[in-house]
Image (cartoon, rainbow, N blue to C red; front, side, top):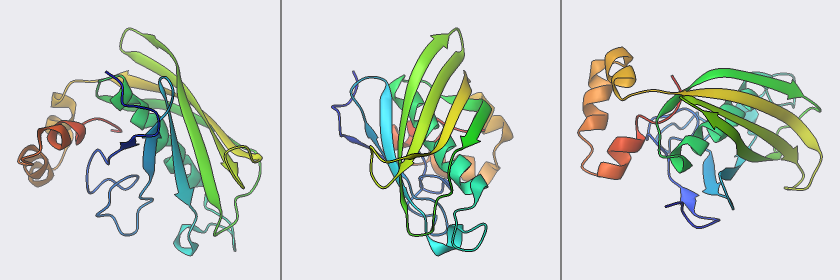
Length: 173
């Protein structure tokens, strides 16, 4: 069953660069469930996220899109990794801007999950700054336990919160 619209979808892993609350230099995105298989998130562009003077680094904007897109997998009750991510930079995003991201699933075929997202500045209806389309591939838990650092895998598997333990292995390779 999907969470009610507006429900905060907690971090999948406390040390995740995209959504982890224990990553002080990370993006610390907080996604919320939407009406269907869609989510929203906000990314506050801080001075540490600069590329050019006073502007967000493009790679960090793509990371914010990837993280938000990956959160869709939680709504689909599957673990998956980013297979492909394409982005279009439409306008610059100044430091101190709040990027409003909306991501949605466009289709599922076998192990493939297709999705898209837009990032807007100045509010959820503001001008589009970045667009992304992605392909996620469903994987089994072994993908993470085979390729991750053993001490991190052990810590994640040792989390007493079953939901958090399962979510630690949900998104991104």
